[in-house]
Amino acid sequence: SPEVKLAVFGRAGVGKSALVVRFLTKRFIWEYDPTLESTYRHQANIDDETVGMEILDTAGQEDVLQKEGHMRWGDGFILVYDITDRGSFEDVAPLKGLLDEVKRPKHVPLVLLGNKADLDHARQVATEEGERLAADMACAFYECSACADQVGTGGGVAEAFHELCREIRRR
Ligand code: GDP
Ligand code: MG
Image (cartoon, rainbow, N blue to C red):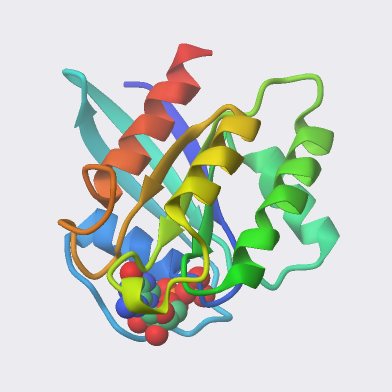
């Protein structure tokens, strides 16, 4: 079966580990060591095909050399920001710039994910801003919550991961 390598990027605290664990276990776990970097293996049935995945949950505080290494390793990327943290949203465009540099001249399969959509009362980034950024980057966009699959614009966290796999396999 095909194998894809996915890496999850974004500022520390945006919920990368919570999202990966939600995807893998359908559960939410409140606290992770934020300095921890882990890889997971997973199989999913996507459009009637079994897809094997290797998922790298980055710590979000790597230096540029480490980031570039992770980018070279990955086939596709989930760029995560926290809708309640404007700074985390502003971190996305530079990440995309670095990805383009590292992967050039290849097209970079991407998904943009605005996490913590359950915290709408503390929102600092409008849904339309996420949509616009995703349009600029020519990628799919989801607002999700690692706490609750019912929250947000997409079909939940799994849909974002599955869409990234599809995007990788289209290339
Ligand atoms: P990481 O540094 O990007 O891996 O972030 P973590 O997964 O460690 O999450 C950082 C903090 O945000 C933790 O306290 C999580 O419980 C919390 N968190 C993660 N995702 C969500 C979410 O969707 N909603 C809410 N309310 N909290 C979240
Ligand atoms: Mg983490």
